[in-house]
Amino acid sequence: MKKQHQVILSLGTNQGNRLENIENCIADLHREIGTLIKVSKLYETPSWGFESEKFYNCAVIMNTHKSAHQLLEEVLLLEEALGRVRHDSEGYQARVIDIDVIAYDEEIIASEKLQVPHPEMQNRLFVLLPMRDLNLDWRHPILQKYLHELLVLSEDKSNCVVVQNLQVPIASIRLEHFNYIAIEGNIGAGKTTLTNKLAEDFNAKTVLERFADNPFLPKFYEDQSRYAFPLEMSFLADRYQQITDDLAQFDLFKDFIVADYHIFKSLIFAKVTLAEDEFRLYKTMFDIIYKEMPKPDLYIYLYQSTERLLENIKERGRSYEQEIPAEYLEKINNGYLDYIKSQHDLNILIIDVTNRDFVSRQEDYVFVLNEIQKKLTL
Figure 1 (cartoon, rainbow, N blue to C red):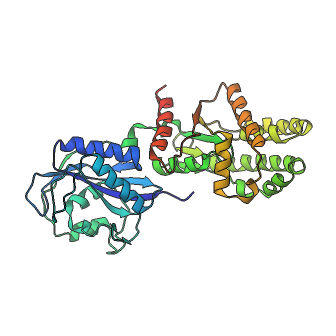
Figure 2 (cartoon, rainbow, N blue to C red):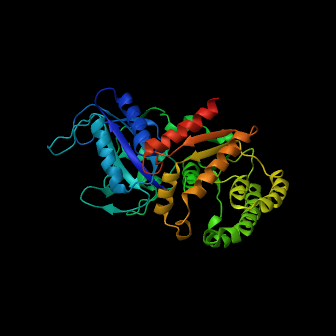
Figure 3 (cartoon, rainbow, N blue to C red):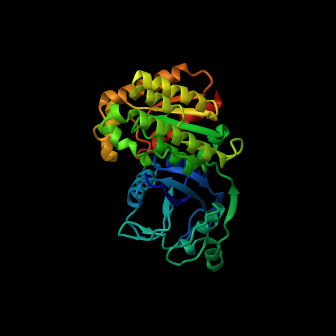
């Protein structure tokens, strides 16, 4: 899964309850389109290019997997839903809400519908001043100038006044209070994707499993009985080594860490794949290792139906996974659920994501965040 795009949006309004318009827009952007990770102060600014009531303006940073043009389409629909009425006449107009795409990473886009960076951004203090609040390390890809340089060079002398601070939508979700979160799930459940999204949105450190480097994995899917024991032993050794090395880099009391696996998954998979005598030997080794492992503050299990897992596996296209039988996935699922029932010292959260897509649908990602937030309030 590729990293998310970082988008800068400028919001403006000069009709009706201006503060309410801005706050509703921020909430809807976050809930429906992409994750808002930073919001500037709110500014009152004079209208530009026409006589009208003063504007309220702000800027936001959004993380999203959406393309620039898909983002634009969704922003225009949101403007309409919030009461924006566009007129055919040329020139500037008063509006209930205005959402401009100012920047999309550091890309240059010049299409009929979208120009990025916004061609007038360097000439507008009501864009530059809120952007400065966001503490961006962003350089204009055409002008090759950083934000502080654009401000010095701007000829706009408008009187832009700070009104108040604005709330960042994710600020109330204090995931870092957990310090160490482990996200688990069956093959294809989306645990690595969610781990990376949380890390990008909440500035967390990641511990990611190196399953693709295991030489026994493709062989196991071809001949399970022959390669099950060396596969599980190599996974156990690698997970122990990796999680020990990776966690040693961090301070478990200060850093916020998100991992896409927990060492106990080794025992779950081994119980499914190994013969009885092999499993007894394996469990002896596992118990020794498990005692030394730090336990996560929150253990999240992403549940998905077997049918959905098979669809996900097919879609991501790893050749050695394509012949995984449904029965195997069901055994793994049951193994996880049995394990979860037996745990009394872990803080466990089960999230059913069978009918959810937290990459393509922002409302599904917000649902996941809200489920985690509930754990904070218990």
